[in-house]
Amino acid sequence: MCGSAASRSSWTISTPPWSAPYERRPVAGRGEPRRILLLAVRDITGVRTGRIVVLESAVRGLQRHGHHVDVVAITHEDGPTSWLGCDVHRIRPPRLGSLAALVPCALLRGRCLNEALFSGRALTQQVREIARELKSDVVVGDGLRAWDAARAAGLPTVMHLDDLLSERYSSATFRDNNDSILGYFGERVPRLTRPGAEALARALLGVEAELARRRENLIAREARVVALTSREEAKRLSLRTGRDVLGIPMAVEQGTLCAPEQAAAGTLTFLGVLHYGPNIAALRFVRDELVPELDKRGRTVRIRVIGKASREQIQEFAGGPFEILGYVDDLPAEMSKSRMLLSPIQAGTGVKTKVLDALSIGLPVVATPMGVAGIPLRDGVSALIADTASGLADAIEDLMDHPERARDIGRAGYEVLGTSMAPDQIYNAWGAAVEQAVSEESRAH
Image (cartoon, rainbow, N blue to C red; front, side, top):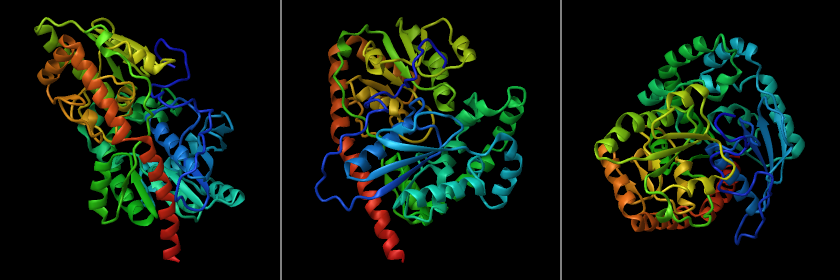
């Protein structure tokens, strides 16, 4: 782990610990209890990221509707065999050395490079056997990478694609500002060969965007149910394919209201892992454009950065107004020390869990439009939104000078989280998705 914290906790700690099963409360009108196989292409019990919060929401929603959930985690990591009251079955993805053969085969079959990392007959056969052994009724697939393995189970499938990889990879911000284009996969590449792998991946990013687009379209047409985290992206995929696509974001529970009006006026929180291109680009925008704008106005700020950062990134932002905290043990407590959350994202996809985490404690949000995409916040009412450094500086000054306004905007955002994005709505959407998948399968046969 990087940063000053030594916890396995992530920056998205807004729900009970991963070891706690969800309380199974009865839901009126729910369908027949079913056995669900959640197919995850990650270490589901590891450090909690925004994507894992989405999958937690799926499990909690399905459990609440009386379904039994088993998890298959395709990961190189060892770990607990239980998560949220579910049994966890671990499958190893292909070894690094075997990818030289798997990647060309996957490309010849029309797959994208992301899928090649989780391809191979042995892997799909293991998923099929586990589904048969567990007598699973429905498969829930974790992103585009899980499609081939999910389909191999031969069961009704709900595919939650998270965000549109095709749009993310088409972004110049993602391409030019991402310090690690390989993401978590880069940690598996030997250090000496990593620069070459990074350069090759960057050169192929445009090709991968087009391949991902084709695969997203195919999955939307072939899976029984397809969902994305962002409702806006769901609409775009629906228009591309002529199929209904659901928008099911992550569920973040309301916590205890903080008191931003009592925090130091110039203390801001920036939340996000810095190996992800849009996050590091946003922090550089803060350093190169926003902070100089505030300096010109005689405003001094302190920016507390929570999230994974490499040694090089820590050195890059050393000095000045930045305090790199890394992961923290108690996210709400750390965020409560600030007057506001800053989310100056310039490009990206999906819904920003960092914003929901701020709303969950009533911390006011200052953001670009992209920083709050997919969240029904109103500028000047439940958040302050601007698309330039000057506009963001105006918003920061406003909350610095008017602590009661920071309190009111924070509480308005808290109310949005509890109504428009209430966890009950998201849990019910997962229950409905499973019933729709089963119904679609019955009609198809």
